[in-house]
Image (cartoon, rainbow, N blue to C red; front, side, top):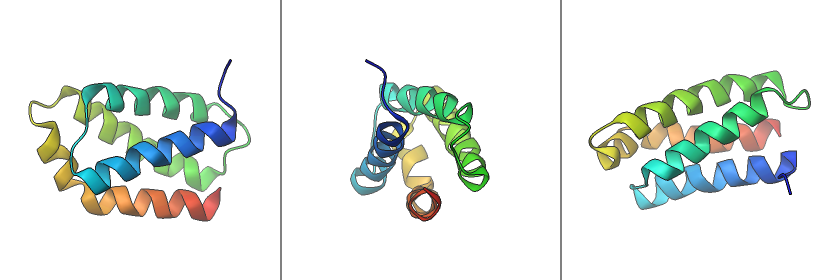
Length: 92
């Protein structure tokens, strides 16, 4: 059963929150973020402002899945992680 738009947004925010709180994550989480962003980007119900944020999250997740030091990548994006979740909450 596919996830609804709301479920996808919630899952996206949960993963970003976990990265921000735990300062660590996994490659599979980054890959999941990529899949969620791709799915949300084609959804016509998504606010344009959120799509801009999703682009940034996609780049973050791509770099995260390809880096040799994922924890460092997450730590260097702490401000972004918090800001993305706040912005998504504001627009969704």
